[in-house]
Amino acid sequence: MDIGVIPNITLLIQAILFLIFVFLVNIFFVKPYTRVIEEREALVRENLERAKKYREEASGILEEAREILEKARSEANSILEEAKKEANKIRTEIVERAEREAQEEAERKVGEIRASLEEEKKKLESAVRDIAQNIVKKILGEAA
Image (cartoon, rainbow, N blue to C red; front, side, top):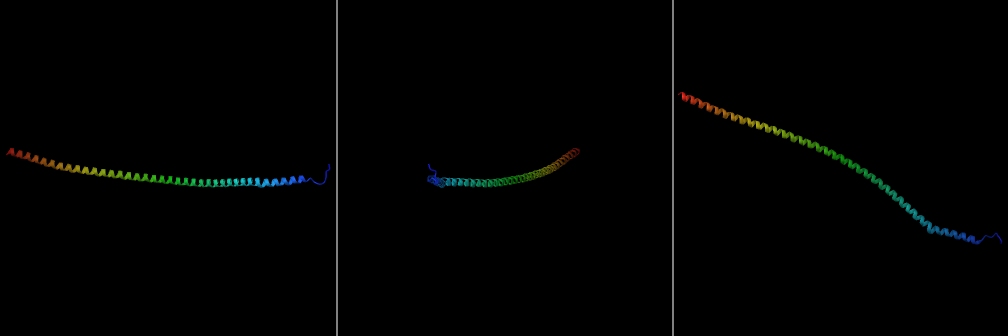
């Protein structure tokens, strides 16, 4: 058993083979696996960024829709108020016109009644005169 100064060559060959094995494993397994993981991470980051962008756009669109809805609601309320005012104005005009027509009709009927009354009064006066004349004739005729 000689322990010599010359190193054992098998140990050196095993070390070289191990390094070659590590190099080959790195090339064929570790680098492709790492590349796939990095691509997936990049894809996930990209999808997260896109989702964040879409969420912000959706928030902006939702806020814009709320503003448009509020504006439409305000316009609808103002249109309703204007329509109510117009309806009240028309109703007031119709009521005033109906009252005026009723007043005119009443005045016309009163005028007709007065005219009819005057006519009847004249007929009555004429009839009274005729009766008075007949009475006078009868009295004068009997006295003579």
